[in-house]
Image (cartoon, rainbow, N blue to C red):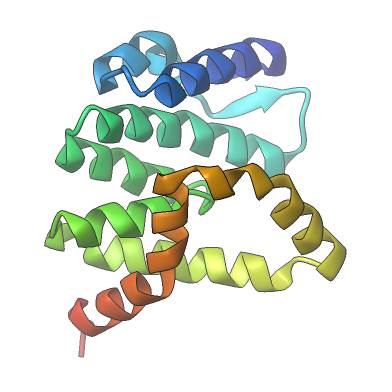
Length: 165
C-alpha cells in the first residue's frame, strides 16, 4: 500500500519523539506506526527515499522495542529494516553483540557491511555535512557507545558468523 509523504512524515516524527523520550515500549510505537507496516511506497518522493522511509518505519518500531528492553523483538524489526535501508546498522550490531543474539549475527554483519559500503560511496562534502549534522550526538552517551564499538562489533560478528562452505 502507498501512503502520502506528509502522512508518513507526521507519523515518523511522532514515533521519533516518543522513542527519544525514553519512556516508551514497542507497543507504544506500534500504535503510531502499525498501520504503515504494509507500506510499499511513499507518494511524492524518489525511490531511494521511499526505501529509506519504509526502512525508518521498521527501524523506529525496532527502536521502541529496544528502548522498552525487548531486545529479541527489536532485533526482528531491525532485520526487517535491513531489506530497505542500512542506516540503523551500528545500533543493530551493538544490540545483537551486547545481548548475544546469535541468530542475528549474520544479518547484523551484512547490514553493517552495507552501511560501510554506502558510507564509502558518499562524497567528501556529503560525509562532512553528515558528521557536522551529528555534532550534538557528542552529548548522547548511547550514540557515543554505539559508534565507539562499531569496529569491534563488526570484528566480533565477522569472527562469529558461520559462513556457508
